[in-house]
Length: 271
Image (tube, rainbow, N blue to C red; front, side, top):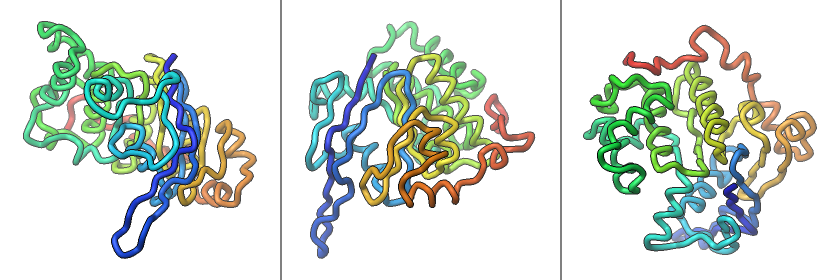
């Protein structure tokens, strides 16, 4: 089992003309294989800052981050190995895939860079990855602009899985997609989490979907975790006024995602 632990992590940014801005204040939590933890908060609450620190795109100002009890590396090959274990699915599938390259290129690149399989097995692995995210093999020679938004996000998920990570950070993975296809992508993430025993940090502003797709919920407000507990407890008996406000503002996901198109996103080969 893989365990990633944030302990008393804070992050300050230097803002020209305004001094320091405290983006995260003493945040602690643990992400483990086989569990989905939702990180919920409005824009500017610090959610994406946590994601960047976990993937070492940003450095914490203070506190520690431990992988299986050891401090995470900050440079060199050790950092590369760490990033193989902790992969990220970005919010915007339109921007996260290079429009100049085919889907094959996007999936082959991590396989080759991380030496996941022998070179003569790369093509088979590309097709296996597409199958895992329920995409038809016919998309392999297409470019991102030839796919729907849902298909592009599935490619992004497949790319994140290519290095066979233990932990997946999903930063608002459906917020840029049409409402009618969001449930299909969330169900895919839940399916992959169960099949591969992944630890998933699901970052969202939607408390309702957090309950349905997570074991635990953390509520982040102005860089501070104001509530943290089992998903049902946080939703049914919120202790903090901010959590209650988020709950009251969240739609019922069964109604929100209802309709004949809810569970599909043209994920096979339709444009």
